[in-house]
Length: 329
Image (cartoon, rainbow, N blue to C red):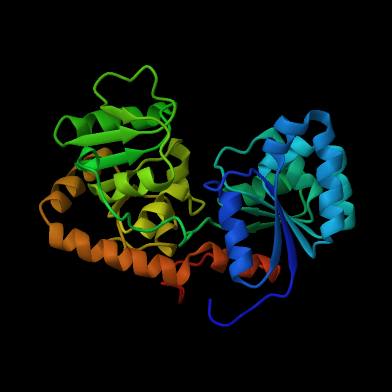
């Protein structure tokens, strides 16, 4: 990010876990010189019950932020307190998920600016009466998305997939891979395990995620919804975490996605189940090629696609300009 420093006070309001995106946003703000307050809305609601909204409201007002960054978990404050925050302070809502929920629309209607990680949501939110909507993909957090110090033998495999199991579109591709390669699948929503899919673990975050990534020859990305392939520069946070960790990422293509990582240079993409299998077979037999691509992908992500890069744009009131072939590549 160079020498750019922002002398701003930023409040980040959403989930509170150190492995959640809100923590990455907070670290990025502080790395840019911002004095930053991180408020854990779900945790405070659990601990304080109905007292949480007024307590958190007082913390925000006492901090006096130049910008409040909201995530969808901020809805636990209630629309009344969110509206008060938006009336008093500049607010930005950053929404990461592909499925646009009612809670997301509620928060977007209250914030001055909404940032979305899929360009498809720009029009959807505009039709829902939301004002300014800008594109902002997620990114790499260098503090947590990095190669692990060690890789336990239990994580070694040919192909790894880390993601939720409640999306049927993922099941058949994983069965095809399991029939011909040593596959490990981890994530929530795989109970009971579907036939033919080797589930070896549940929700995987932090160091175990980096170990599962580094222990696999190929780290797979699969869309949760088939329509993600149609456009919107649709990228899962999985892609950024794999690139940051130094894994070799093979992902399901979506229109515009090479804005972020180029095929055969920073990662690899596939357009169909048949191409997926062909590319798995190709890269399993070429470890040196995989290693070179993974190293280039990590260097590219750290140089161009960290949360500090995203927050720098947000603090300047800008969205990410998604134009294939631009100078970011």
